[in-house]
Amino acid sequence: MGINQAWCRVLGILGMLGGLVLFAGDMLFYYNDTNTDLLMNMGQASDTRILLSGISAMVGSWLYMLGLGQVYYAFKPSSTVVRNLVLLCLAGIFIAYGVVHAAYVAIATTAKVAVQNQLDIEATSALSLRINDALRWFVYPLFAVLSFLFIKQVWQLKTLYPRWVILFFPFIPFLFQSLFNNVLSGTAWVVIMGGYLNLMLVLFFAASTIALWNRTFEQKK
Image (cartoon, rainbow, N blue to C red; front, side, top):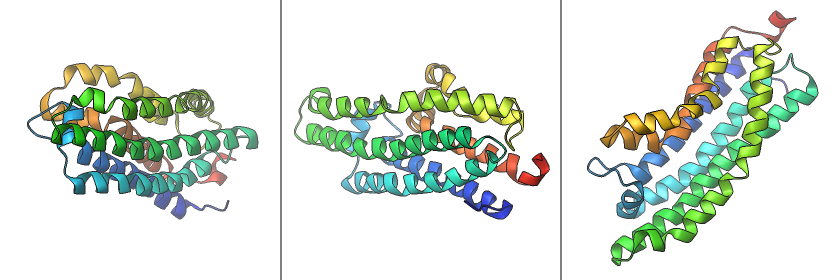
């Protein structure tokens, strides 16, 4: 895969755009300036908002996959085995982001049916929620392997990344998710917690792009 410095920058920006597109998709599901019940907010979302959010799953996933090229560039100094494992784990996670977000269409749709017909929203949406939760379990092993390899390689300076990038690797903000969940409230809680997983990747690609902006593989030799 031939990626030069200019393409590395472009791919990082595309990765950030992927996160912003899916964050917008999250807000199309969740945002309501008067209510913090995310399931109820989905049930009250318009058909257009649900449709556009579903479309964002595909577009955002495509952009995330393009952003994968920047990580490939950063891991050029690593061994082929490690680099390929990192890329496979990231690819699996990025695809899962799109699949899981698309599965939220079923949650939003069943919640909307419940609201429109005055049904129990939790019971009506239970199956779609259970399926969505099941999909997430396929991601956790990939995330564990990726976190170990990424943090170890970057800390040992076996990539083009400086060590400070570890602070913005998704594992670190993931650890603080419960803290934000407890201290935020109201609209801020809906925006940050509703889009938290995609905001983690926006932050990562932003840090990655800044770190690699003037770095080349030759500098690491």
